[in-house]
Amino acid sequence: MIRNRFVAGALAFASGFAFAALPALAASADYRFELVGKPQLSGQKDIVQVRLIHVADGKPMADAVIFESKADMGPEGMATMSAPVKALAPKDGTYSFEVEPGMAGTWALHLAAKVQGESETVRGTITAALVK
Ligand SMILES: [Cu+2]
Image (cartoon, rainbow, N blue to C red; front, top):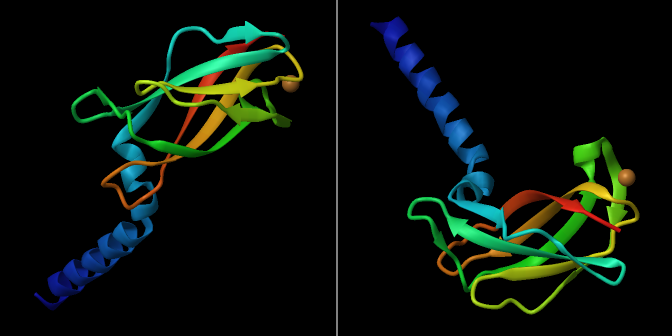
């Protein structure tokens, strides 16, 4: 009995601890960034279009504010190679970014967004084949 209580207490403590560590990612797990179509080359820049999907109902979020966007070549084992990213004006739930890659290949675009009604920042990464 005492032993069981101890185990239960330890579990409660452990799960409480895990829960405390989780909130930073809780909102992110509810959403998914999705690439829209193929990136389009415009001059030396690739226009990457992204949607933010609410996983539970598959609905695109049209009123998110993506306040951080960073590109690197992590998917090709070049995580330290970054590229300038410029956010363009969002339109109908599609968020566009102008990426100027130093080389062609698969790039990761790391995004952080504020979504209405979510206190936590939503973070996610998409990968896209960029040309130059
Ligand atoms: Cu590279």
